[in-house]
Image (cartoon, rainbow, N blue to C red; front, side):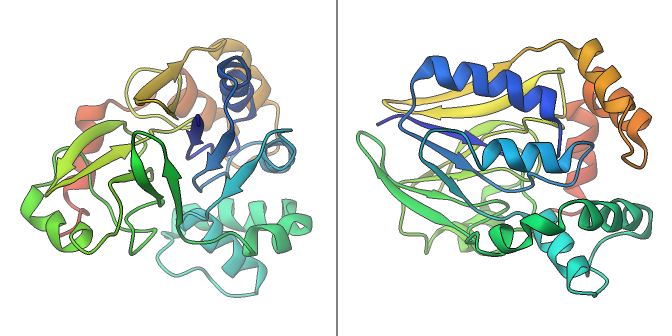
Length: 247
């Protein structure tokens, strides 16, 4: 059984298209879409794409889907900083037709994968889609989060940086971000079966930046420049996340 895990697409349709080309070549049996499909510059097109892949697909929600659903319910999403609220409002207006589908996504998924055992897919951590940890988070802080998890392998996303580490007696892998990576530009994802492969797919960044800049997305030019052409470095983002990680 081969599973592709794609996380944190953030409406970057060109990056998603490049990854899907590789996934088709890999002849996977299942795709797991691990949350934060939205917001981003092309939310409707991105949702339409992942909802019609032509291969068995399972979804789980991320913190951004929660925020957009809250906005659609007429509530200001908790925990969203004021500078990002226009993006959440704009996204909610765009994707209203997908509200029912997104609301049905679960928080976690557990699958039995030959040679890997029970694999739990979550967005942030198994207990909370908002919780932050990275390759640098001290293990002792994470043991209470993962000790009770009934899985041999945990796959997560949320922080947009790939890693493969052991917490206690459990392997934990971050799939990285398809659409908003931190580090070298490209589209990051995960292939499971028979082993664990952290993948990076290159794509035409200049063409993608032009497509994104032509959208009505708030801050489209900034997204193209800062999330496609020249993303923040891993070192810079590890410092940022260190202030917000699990204590």
